[in-house]
Image (cartoon, rainbow, N blue to C red; front, side, top):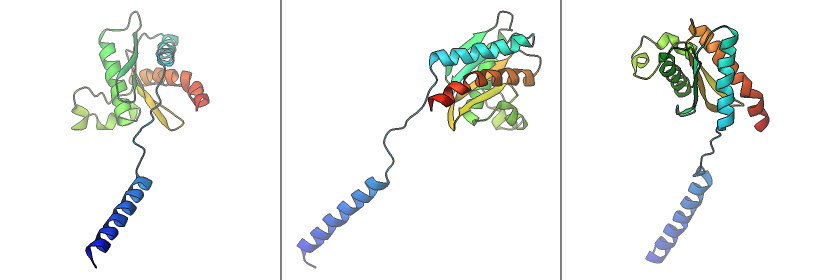
Length: 166
């Protein structure tokens, strides 16, 4: 082969490689669905309303899929410490993509001892139509089950609207 044919083969190979790479490359953009502030506030207020129906005052925190706070409220007589605990439950649920009651068995493990995580019932994920929107964490009820039931009520209050949006 002479230099011209080697160069021609190199150019052809390079062009083919680039076209194959482009054909299989993922889009450089990622589409992420998020809750509106109104929907996040609605979910938090419905969570509080569900616990009020049970005669319990709680704190509720809604985080986005990254665990960042989007909406939070503490009912009038809910203990102040319940704010931080509700945030940690929501953060844990969002980061593990699971309700925190499902993580309880890991609480006494090295991962369960990581600062900022709470692997006890009371955190519920907001996953609708295969899209992870975030999580709601609740604290202040006498049991984690009650906390989680209220969080799930908050999630259910926005589920239909999220399903219709898809």
